[in-house]
Amino acid sequence: MRIVSGIYKGRIFTPPKKKFSARPTTDIAKEGLFNIINNYFNFEDISVLDLFSGTGSISFEFASRGCTNIQLVENNPQHLFFIRKVISELNLKNIISIRQNAFAFLERCKNSYDIIFADPPYDIEGIEQIPELVFTNSLLNQGGWLILEHSRNKNLSKYPYFESVRNYGNVHFSFFVHKK
Image (cartoon, rainbow, N blue to C red; front, side, top):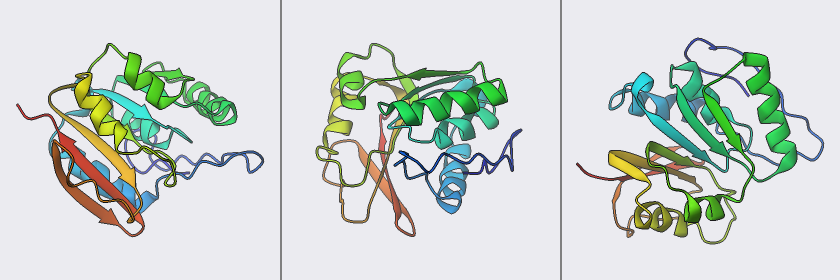
């Protein structure tokens, strides 16, 4: 796992192979995604929620680019241990890590965010509940984005607030926007 831009650009962190099942977002997909985000948001001014955080790769990209308000949610204790180790190594004070089921978190969350990034396992059931929970519970600020990473086998274009989909090889990002 490599941080592709910002103050930690080029830093490499290797998750343990044993009992580690997370699938980090590819560097090419991360670069494309963050180029899009950079055209619409000022990283220093936004709040981010990273769901199904896995390796923490997306949160580390946001932190490296200057985002100061990041919450990440990961339920797997081995994954969270790795994430917290990297947070400590980089001395990041701007990431709050939470061990919880992402769906349960969305049901109980009282905060709102400018960007919510969700990268559930590609074979998870109920992926369509994520946009529903985000918008039903008003978890996005006006103009905020939900970015949902998924396989090519999912088509989320029929769901409310869907804006577009971007493809980077096997990685697909569906964008949902809370319009101003």
